[in-house]
Length: 176
Image (cartoon, rainbow, N blue to C red):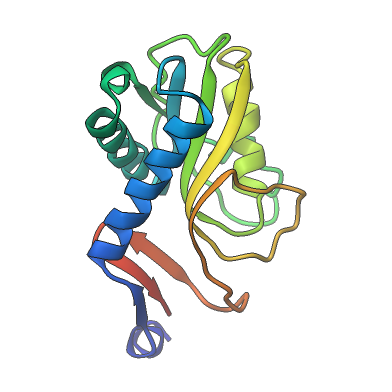
């Protein structure tokens, strides 16, 4: 089965496309928030962490005030509402070494699918404090929402079937 999926794999975005999407999202974040002051990027473990770090680097490049953008990560696996329905194990540890009270938190993930991971991440972030505002940035929105969650920033809307698997890395986006 894995070999069959790999043979059907199709790259839909290349590395340059991913870089452009990250650059565009970074510009949108700084424009909507009138700069990067007070913004904290929180990557959802595991796929959202590298995206949050890439966004932070791009924000620092385009916005002088962006040098102070805070970056952290949150592991939402134990906050999921489907723990009994599928095996769940902690992906990694949460790393929020700064206060999020009063901050504009931008949750960052690689792929938005059902919305359940984002809902769990919101619960996890709530354990660290009370942000002034929470926004959501994703590189790929593939639809199929089960919860009323909509991203504020999207790199690419990518309609897929529920059977397909979307893999996002800095080298591109692959559907199998």
